[in-house]
Image 1: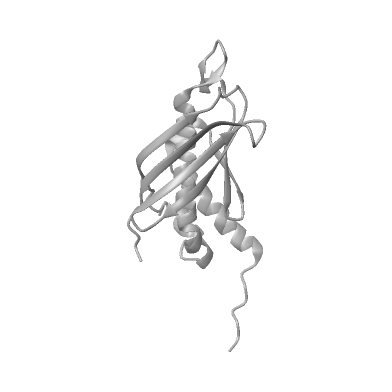
Image 2 (image 1 turned 135 degrees about the horizontal axis):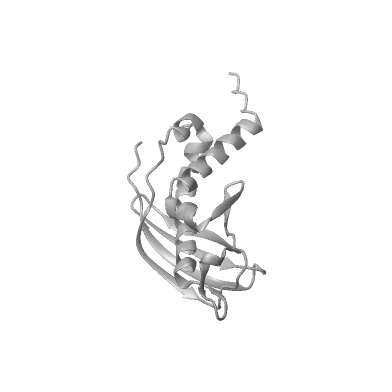
Length: 169
């Protein structure tokens, strides 16, 4: 029995990047805020590049609380969707052609989302990572942490619960 030859690394990387790009750019709110995602293997880091439109209190100045909450929730949803798609991406069940034609998977729906504002978001880039605590067929729990200059100095964190989309197996 001969083993199948592994795909070239650039093909796998292209498929992963195309899947992430389609997932992110398929949501207009993500584009409006300018949120980007950096991928290292299966780990995602969300990046909220600073823009003057994100300021809520010009006297401090500080990033608007709604922007912070939106950034955290977006990070949670994309992180959760990405973790659920990983096997489909790796197996090739999700193709670059299908993604470019707009065949996007359904996204998890928020049940509840609680944000802890730990300090003011300063007028600079922000970063966030989601950790999926539990993900089943119907329900998932995700924790998100956001920071700016130092990874250990959080300016916000959140916990969310999500209704998972039905899988087309």
